[in-house]
Amino acid sequence: MTESGSRLAGMRVLVTGGSRGIGREVCHHLAREGARVLVAARGQDAVAETVAELEGDGHRGLPLDVSDPAAWEHVAAILQDDGLDGVVTAAAVIEPIGPVSTYDPAQFWRTMSINVFGTFLAIHHSMPALEASRGAIVTFSGGGATSPLPRFDAYACSKAAVVRLAENLAVVTREQGVTINSIAPGFVVTSMHEATLAAGPQAVGEDYFERTRTAVAEGGASAAEAAALVVFLLSQDAEGISGKLISAQWDPWRDEEFRRRLRDDADLATLRRIDDVYFGALDRAASL
Image (cartoon, rainbow, N blue to C red):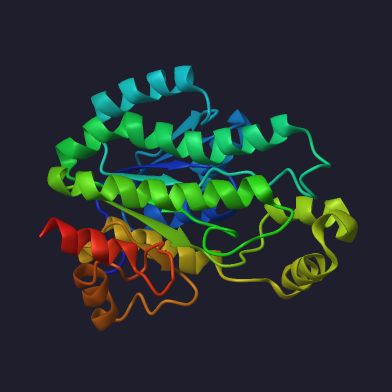
């Protein structure tokens, strides 16, 4: 094991959505572990404020709309010049909220553009630099990725897509020495949930509205736990782990035996159909 507090010493890590919520917590954890953090998010003031808070030196702010391909061209040039060892894609939005017939379809597409296309753009433009450093990528799952989240259609679809994107890319990026994993952070209370409460129980559904209100009142899951998992997945300790969806709250990811299983069991911590017929196993058998 490497020494806590310096596991990421000298590493250059890009964090999208880094000016608030889980992304901001991630930036603080990375800085405390010795990384130089590129904080990318909308809003120049919020980005600058986050950078100013971080421990250590060499941090930088990048005001950025993650869904804008032209903006990423500028970022790609920076990454190519400065080098890059890790990417964390934490930028996301949760709206629209409500039954499918009640919201503008353009809202659905905006969420997909930010949550999925924004994640893709970050990976696409970072890959040359990550291949050079044999770096790591961490994406974020969320509600709806592994089970239905009614009335949050765009968010649920986008988070399932992000996990599948990570799994898909991991098959190839292993060849370049780049790992990519997804984190399920749990019900972390962030400003995102203000939209749920503002929408009200009629749009959200009574049960989920009450669950959200209770979680907000009680504090919810720990953002620090999700950030600690990010640090692990970017560190040398996670070598050989790729293409996995890991729960920060429920998986025993600090346990060495569980880490061994993540490395050795191809189907553990992945999105798969549960049925009497396991198609993946049949596909593998047919190829032998």
